Amino acid sequence: MKTSLMKAIELIASMDAELLDILSVTAQMSLQSSIIALLIGLPIGIWLGACRFPGRNVLLVANRTLMGMPPVVCGLLFYMLFSGVGPFRHLRLLFTVDIMIMAQVVLITPIVVGNMETYVAGVAPAVRETAKGLGLSGTKTFLLLCSECIYQIISAYLLAFSRSIAEVGAVSMVGGAISWKTNVMTTAIMQYTNRGNFSLGVALGIILLSLSLIVNIVISLLQRRLSR
Image (cartoon, rainbow, N blue to C red; front, side, top):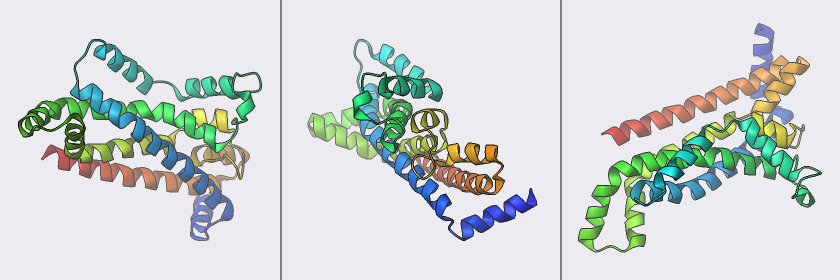
């Protein structure tokens, strides 16, 4: 174990080419999927939190269900749609980073929606009264609401990002964990551990834990700021 740890530190310090490739694919997938999820989930979450309309509770239940969707189920769905017998097989997206991003968006968008809806539901009445008093339009009211929720928006994004980098089920099914192409940190840890290459697995584990720690520290600081 000590030898594996020392070799892992050496791999990180020497900027191993394979390690950098895995980190690059992970960053590409996680950053793009979390940004897309934020762009989709932010307006939906604000809408659900600020508005009251028939069917709202049904949408909230549906979103909470999607928040708990097993990643392997999402991976299975995308595999069936884009495999050689699926309706979208002509797009040839299976075992590419693009389909990994798509699967991640489906998994993490409900997280953004749920976080924004919960927070906005608490601040929307006061913002609505302020906007009404100032005679603001619907668009300006939305922008005012976004400015009031800026720290929560950042927090929701970081939660989505942390879920994206830690997910393994869906990305392994649709990406195939192909070396130098679709291998991300989580799938690589499994792959290299099974091969007995513990040093690279440990190196990736150290980086993954470090990223998780940094993200959680930032989220904690933001939540402390919100609670003031």
